[in-house]
Image (tube, rainbow, N blue to C red; front, side):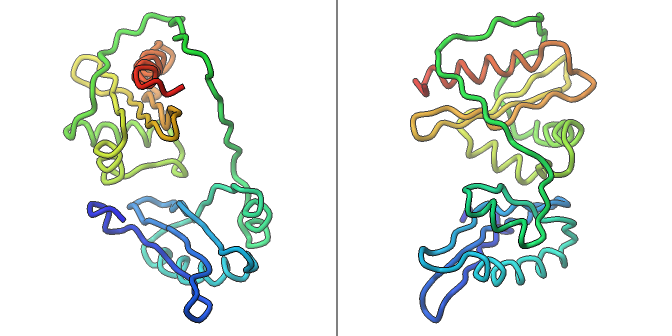
Length: 210
């Protein structure tokens, strides 16, 4: 749906002329593809519709060198269906909510410059992202640049001339969401993540996103 993301793929399932399901499965030059959206029309059985959608999706992605396909098992109906379709649980995601407006007191004294992410930072951001995470969570340079231009708040941590970390946030539905916070492993444990966290919270608090 984005002009700068031509690889985005939206797959539709029809019962004659009635749209009964969809999957959004964008390929992003990574070994893992996330199913970004899955929907089945009310009154239709989820499993056969999803199976019909997955067959061409998996065939297409395998031809592009994708090693695995991943989905967030939410809501509950999806969590029940995916294991029956040979999806294996690989991790659990825990969400933390901050309801007050206080800022954390840094336990360490970080010394990075926190500034807005620029186009020239994208290769370093991608490098740090892949150093800090397993392939399941990797972003490509195209994805990072897309995020940089579309997300509400994207900052980097810089030491000397090197970008060593980044964080990006968005605000929707009246709530702030810290989407990702990354510090290259060589620079972890120095309080730089706290600097990025505080910068992100400052931005969200400034928009009354609580």
